Length: 321
Figure 1 (cartoon, rainbow, N blue to C red):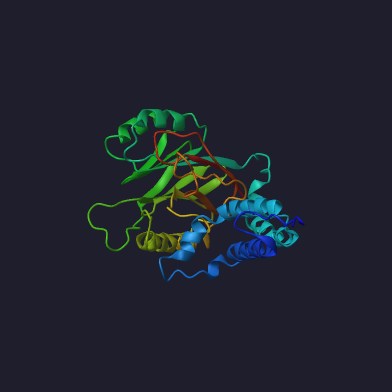
Figure 2: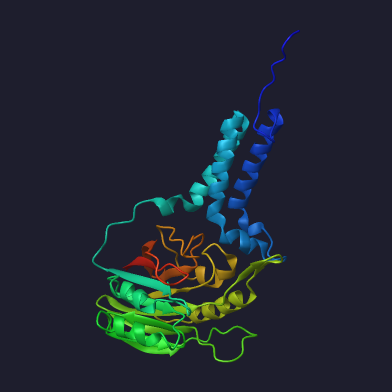
């Protein structure tokens, strides 16, 4: 009786068909990376949902690579060059070393401190010890505000507060005003944006602090209508800003690739280095806390250790022109 030897494939992906399946998935992944803007938002805002987690398609590439190796498929391995090239083009630069600190750099911290933070005193101490030039905070509730004010008063003698957002600064502030970014459908007290001027040794900077409405992911997709409307209002304010140099610090409840934030990212530049995933703090998967700039360069952004908030603080170094 003759023994018949069969080629063993990866479970669920037998024979050459398995290699072709993996190659097809590799091409699909590359297509989503390159053409994510073509995924429609009409139903469930699927385009924005994809863009919220776009960097994680790199994890899909790793899984496909492992399967291709186990399957010994040259076709699949060759096809994987496409998503590798696409991911590298989009995100590879964020992994490179940042430029050395310069004499015209500002260090800033952005943090949603959470209105239910169980340890505002510890959070305030961590922020006071950050060494930043500017500290922007959101979800400042009345009960916790005195705690932050006391801890930050010595290192940051200047502050601007409007509603539940605030900015603490080592440099003088002026021209502070409320930003009306309340979207339709929200009634009652709602003040989550401010604009002020920071008078640095290198010139004046218009600083914006904003907290856009939350989004939800459910069976119907991404619910981001209010966030998008608020972003549009903030974008109009930025377009009308006459100060040349502008920085925006805030919890924008979206990533820089999410088209819902186009009114902001089309006017301001994102950080050149660093991922700084900031939410949720227990297992961060996305950076929704941002530092964006106009006529200045956000050299690098990074995440700081966890506080009592459900967000991680992020710190960025801004190079003024």
